[in-house]
Amino acid sequence: MPQLPTPEEMNVYQNAEARFEVAAQKLGLEQGIYKYLKYPSKEITLYIPVGLDNGALEVFTGYRVLHSTVRGPGKGGIRFAPDVSLDEVRALATWMTWKCAVVDIPFGGAKGGIICDPRKMSRGELERLTRRYTAELADWLGPERDIPAPDVGTGEQTMAWVMDTYSMHHRQATTAVVTGKPIELGGSRGRREATGRGVMICCDKALAKLGMKKEGTRVVIQGFGNVGSMAADLMQKAGYKIIGLADIGGGLYNENGFDVPKVIDWVSTQKKPLEDYPGGGTKMTARDVLFQPCDVVIPAAIENQITEKNASQVQAKIMCEGANGPTTWQADAIIDAKGVFTIPDILGNAGGVTVSYFEWVQDRQGFFWRESEVNERLLDVMENAFDAVVQYAEMHKVNNRIAAYMVAIDRVAKALKMRGIYA
Ligand code: NAD
Image (tube, rainbow, N blue to C red; front, top):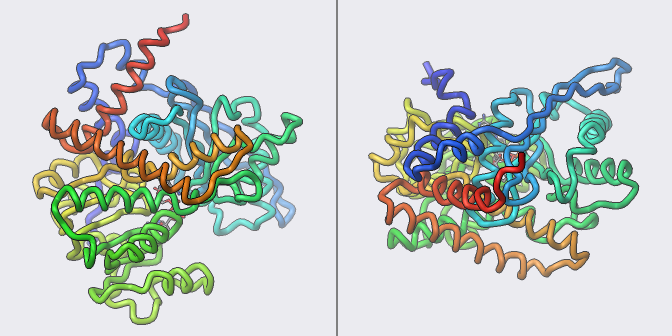
């Protein structure tokens, strides 16, 4: 029998809350500020009518949660998935607030989601769903209000539709209303690789911190979408050895290492299942791949993968979270006790929102940077954020995750106090 987490452990909002509570307590946050930061500032539920290709009318449920605009406009992706829930979107919005504060970019936190299965919908149906969702939110979104981006199940094309719909409603081309757009529409060079690159920068820093060499360092990655495949590709090019891969269909483990561009070609160009990749080594479940012998493990798929029940099986020395919320709060102590050097999601995957910030800046300037410039600035932001978190952890004797929350909450709380409460 697979060991499944308890329903409480599965609730990502409770996971986000639990870490917030610990960090807030350690910071000695005043009661009023604590309450202000604990709850989202707005939650919108939408019932979105869409005409399907077969002539039927379907009504989809969608959400947009704005957690905070204390440090700047809300920022956060839109997720299309069958198991989207308000609690999940709320957790993801909250994490965006902390993530933007950890990397010190002038955004608050937001997130959106629609309950749907994009793999079972036609391009036309997805376009109509995206446009109606955007139209319903036309007064809430905006470059100075709330700026969406892609997440699981959405991509550059979705963002192009959001940008166009918003622009039609506002009677002006407004590229800065979304990030993660195609380059032709004001997207940024380097955005596609940004989250994976940020993961690699954090792993490089962790290796240096632990006195480990990059060459031949064995890496396992769960998730082979935007984050996982880009991290795998960049890390292999940099000298790491990628020995485990997984996507929704299953996992593969091969001690000899994968030729990542060939796997990307197999999955993305040839549209074949990852688990059938020729010479892929031992087949296993997508979850089991996380617990194989390796030096670095990168959960880069979905939430709740490392739990109280299985955390003791992690064999890596470093865990860098590419996904949001892959580790439940009950698993934190087990991972700590094993001495795993953890790079928490709000730091590990912050490369994406950092380059989203660069995209927004470039759109507003109407002046676009070279890819080398984007990557150089990303390196600078990620290295500074990593150092801030690790130094804080050492100084205050907390783990890296709680340190990241404390750095973030402290920055938002300071900004909030300076602004004061408008009443
Ligand atoms: P994606 O849709 O491009 O890829 C998701 C990958 O996870 C796919 O390979 C899919 O097959 C796999 N997957 C889905 N369900 C799975 C399961 N049950 N078991 C194993 N694998 C499974 O999504 P993405 O953009 O790569 O995002 C992945 C994670 O990273 C999400 O948690 C997302 O919120 C987070 N994230 C993404 C970005 C970004 O820039 N794309 C930025 C920050 C955080």
